[in-house]
Image (tube, rainbow, N blue to C red; front, side, top):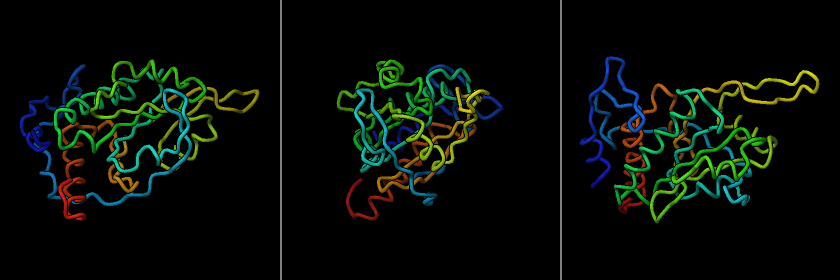
Length: 228
């Protein structure tokens, strides 16, 4: 089944607000998104690059892990309790993973990345625990759970992506000690490493994201002259 078929078969029932919230279906559009390939996603910026750690503590450049995949990347921290923040992103990513997994044409071309901006607490082992069963690839869609070695490596990523984060400050040292709040942003990155779309919680709809992903694949097909 193609991603377009998935888009057509998804339920479009919703509340007056435009989406519903549920544990397994966090938000459903009350309208059909534009058909993939009928619109253009402009290059917003090149994705920043720095050292990151996977759940096994292996160090790599972020660009090494995103190269040759369409990547959906979101910043999280594992202790976040805001229902419109990290928990929402996790549920949307989980739903997208299942839908992409069910589409062979997309399965090996798309990946998800959850990147912590709390390296002091979110060690690789904590990120492994946070990932749970979603970490298992089983030959399907890859979902990476990453952190950074320290705040030094984190800040160029946060600043480069334009991710808004507020920290509380230790008055004695003047250093950030914990996160207070952040604005949820999810970034769609193409295979060449360019950010092509930025989603906030208001617009984090799986149907629209799938349409954008397929649009990038159609663009790729047109550029290469080969099927995506």
